[in-house]
Image: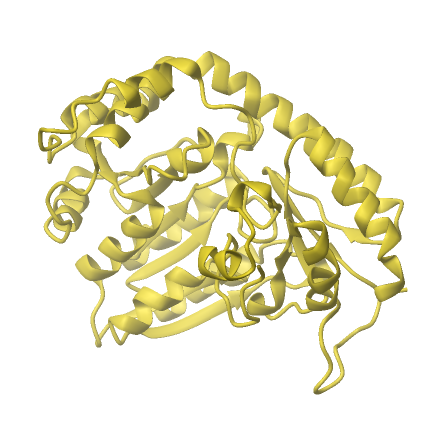
Length: 367
């Protein structure tokens, strides 16, 4: 069930599940952070009624128009992508080469580094640390941008895996530094729907590209759908690298239907935030260090040891082994360099309580 320690993201390994005779739908997968509420019936109907005998609109015009209405911009400021991971790779193809350098706000989603490595780009990371509750070091980011003048600055906001959020005034400072150096700032907002509206960054400028995940917002990961919001000139450069018909017809129809049912989805995002707070508070009572979050997931530290002894297994991997017979999966943060940390994607209250009970029974691992 569990990916190897070197796995770079959450989610189920379907091949291993088949080997064990386990159905994917039987797993409570807390390793991913997807809207746990049911897909709206009109979205399901839109997919069902989709004509599969015709090619989809390669430019996804109607979908882009609907996204633009939601974002308050023009359709030429939107590029629909096959999930944010495709967006990340398209951006790298468009702007990076072996003469470029990039800066990554870490710990971070592995694909920022992966596309940079594929393009043979020089990489530097600026890392937030558990001792400071993973607060992003904004002043150091700005200093790095000004001194190193990177081609791209990758920052996830709210951040995966930490759940931290860089507030508006700090993003404006980063933006100003990037304008000064000609750096393109990629703000990965894959989880921003679950962030409180009053703190959300809304600015747009010629050097900021915002990545958004409809997959996560609307709970449709099987369709793979997202978009990049930014300057039409930059989007034109990125679109040159996108294969035709990247967005399937069912995905386009589902995206349009989701946006039309935004009031339903807004209510689910609010309920997820409330459940996240409740679940975090419950876990704190088990002796875990539970970090703050501005999304539908959060991190927790198992135990109080400062470091994992050489050759020893992290508490996160040990816990996952105990959870496997219960058909539960959490995100072992070893691949982020945090072997005693876990990331938990919030589910329904019922499932969250089941995980809470399981963690309580297995707390001897880290105590």
